[in-house]
Length: 310
Ligand SMILES: NC(=O)c1ccc[n+]([C@@H]2O[C@H](COP(=O)([O-])OP(=O)(O)OC[C@H]3O[C@@H](n4cnc5c(N)ncnc54)[C@H](OP(=O)(O)O)[C@@H]3O)[C@@H](O)[C@H]2O)c1
Image (cartoon, rainbow, N blue to C red; front, side, top):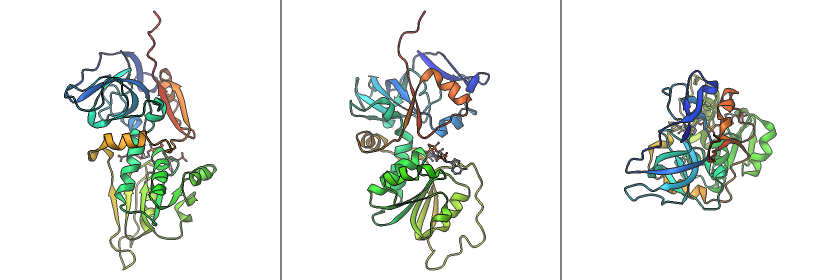
């Protein structure tokens, strides 16, 4: 089969070529990959990956062979999957059934490929804030893939959502997704919040913490700014209005239950993944080499299964 493998000397550090077929373990399915969507984490992992390894977490396709242990989706079912052990930028992959969910047959692989890491991260982060009904919830990085889903899921949960996005041309989009307020920076937020989900880090995390009401939590989910966090003296000195505030770290893969969550999100026809820029998978290396620009939406690579011309 064909797969992209890491190759430090090649454009984008990737080469498309023949590799051995996957050999699923008893708890793994063999799937035909129809579309995949690179995440920032995939791209960040490229540099440290051993040469010749197949990158790629999220994707969607169809089950070719169910897992030998009999669990999980069955042959022919449409699925979406998340494999934190990579191997996804390939025509076929083995993936654990604990990271695979059945999707509606009519859902497009391109849409499904945008969901695994971003949408399940958003769902788990919103849940971690506890009951948000009628409470102010800050989403820092509203235009990020995770942020877009977090805005929608928090708003549906009854939160009064305050989204932060530096690109003001996209504020209307975030309001349409359910944000009650949208600001370019955290300086625009004038009243305390119950909780925050931060995709950006750096000064954003420091400022989000300062906005918490008593008992509030910031979920430090992402670190897109790549910047240090410096808390000023007094940030952790509490009075009755600011006691019991916390910052918690987050890793998607720490809890069980992904199949049910991914299935729920895949079946949710109202969940808006935003614009999708579908490209042939042969363009992957050129896209990475060019800086992996996201534009206004997700880049999704459509995998070709046609026989190669001789
Ligand atoms: N812990 C976990 O398990 C987990 C799971 C999923 C994601 N993550 C992390 O969460 C973050 C977001 O992931 P994603 O897939 O949603 O990313 P994404 O779609 O690539 O979006 C990145 C966002 O960061 C913004 N941004 C980048 N640099 C910035 C800066 N200096 N100041 C302000 N905004 C900045 C971008 O704003 P523009 O739209 O204006 O460009 C964009 O909204 C990443 O760090 C990712 O690694 C962690």
